[in-house]
Image 1 (cartoon, rainbow, N blue to C red):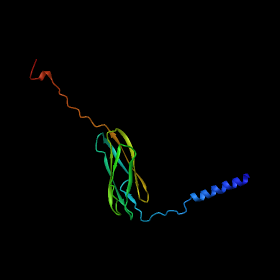
Image 2 (image 1 turned 180 degrees about the vertical axis):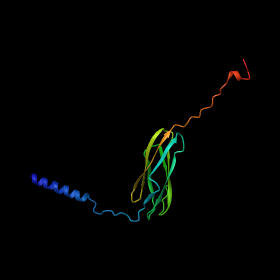
Image 3 (image 1 turned 90 degrees about the vertical axis):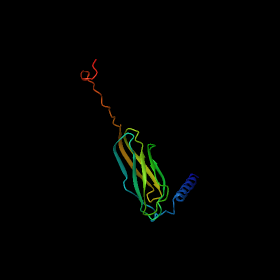
Image 4 (image 1 turned 30 degrees about the vertical axis):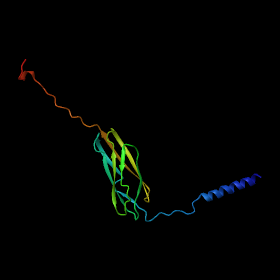
Length: 153
């Protein structure tokens, strides 16, 4: 009896495994769009607090079908990406604007993930740098010499 139950369980498991496998393997689309970026990382270097924190990444569609960014997401709220929501036709270029909030002091390493219909659907670009406090401008001090003052006491 145990052998029969065990045989049925084995046959059922084997059948379910075969059904779970994808028989119709999807082939890569040779016409699919391909993203080409001018850079994968931008280094702000050392910048002052509250300074301009924008940079641009130029991307190009090198495929044969329109490129569509379905989502562009930054690793935190201090980095804001902006991009065109329109499909990018083959051979065309556009820019992805990335703005970092420079109110925060210290070093930063942030990533922006681009999700699209390209052959590689997920692309990660990075920004890094260091924000230092703004220099303070001291007012010159007025030195008054009592001895040479026009008003003597």
